[in-house]
Every structure is written in structure tokens, then in C-alpha cells.
Amino acid sequence: MTRIVHKFTRRVPEWRPRLEPVKLEEATQEQLDALKVTPSNTKVSDYVLTLAHDVESLSVRSPLFNAIMYDRGGMSREERELGALAASMVNRCIYCAAVHADRHAKLAKDNSVTDELFANGDKADLSPRNRAIFDFARKAAEAPPSAGPEDIDKLSRAGLSDEEIFDLILSSSLFGWANRLMHVLGDPVGRKETV
Image 1: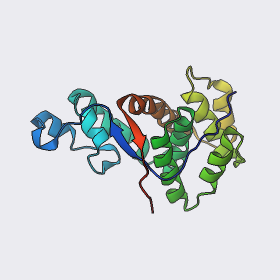
Image 2: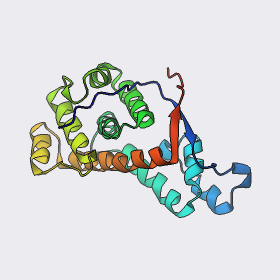
Image 3: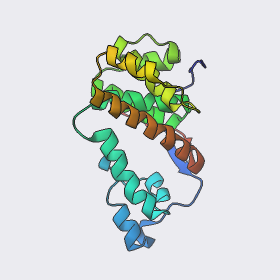
Image 4: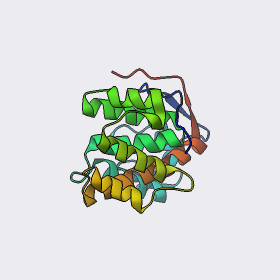
């Protein structure tokens, strides 16, 4: 097992695309329609504008992202963020790790879990439930994935329902893919301060 310790932070960096993002004032109607739904239903970022070069994939990507990360029921938002954080740490995605660590800390109203993970990586001292979630998401994001039936059993023993386990599989798998896409399309630069 590779130890995950890296220079991660909750301070979200800027993201600089390698391809020129679509300019809103020059966007086609199809691009504008696809841009109506954004990840987490927030602003239209340079990342989303870069993805707008492929209208068909963007028009399904953002609603799928929002459904996996924000739909009600199943796993809590806080725990979905922990799964996304684990995947982002494995993939060394500085940007996504910062976003999901910041969201986790805000949802939990506590930064001790993310501080512990950033200080000690996969050796972090976590509650049994958080340990099972982190370990599964980490293994699911490895290339090739090493999560197996015994990891599902650990999640069940840690108290996760089948619906929560499915949400974790979706969130960690989503970020196994999304991190790789973000790495190829651009780079984290500088830091934005978060509150």
C-alpha cells in the first residue's frame, strides 16, 4: 500500500485551463443550454467553460455530478465529500482535494478530520466509520482499483447501509475520473482564500 502524504490544504487554488475556455458571449445556443446546469449549481467557472467545448458530454456530466454529490437520501453530504477527498488525495489532485476538504470541514463544522488526513495520509487516526469510508474510496480510486468484497463488508460492519455504500461507490468513482480529467485540462495555480 502506498502511503498518501502530500502538501494538501483546504485553501482552494485557482485553476488555469490549458485549452481556451468557451467565451460566454461567443457560445452557441447548445453550449448556453448545457451551461445552465453547473456542478453544485454555482457559477460558470473556467473549468465548466472548458468542458463546454463538448456540449453533449457537458449536458450529461453536470446533472450526473449534481445527482451523485447532492441528491438527498443515502450517504450524508459530509461523507460523500470524504469519499471525494480520498479519491482526490490518491490522484494528487490539489484542486479537488482542497475543494472537498473545505466542503467536508464546513459541513462537519469541524476541520479535525481533514487536518488529520492532510498530516498523516492513509495512516490518519479516524473513527471506524470514517476509516472504512476513506479506505474504500482510496482503494476505489487507485489505478487499477483494489476495492473488493471485503471492503464492502468493512463498510457494512462500520454501519453503512446498502444505499450509503452505493453513494460512496458513486462519489469515489466519479472523482477517480474527474481528477484525471482536471489534471489533463489544466493546472492549479496560486490559492484562493476560503472563509
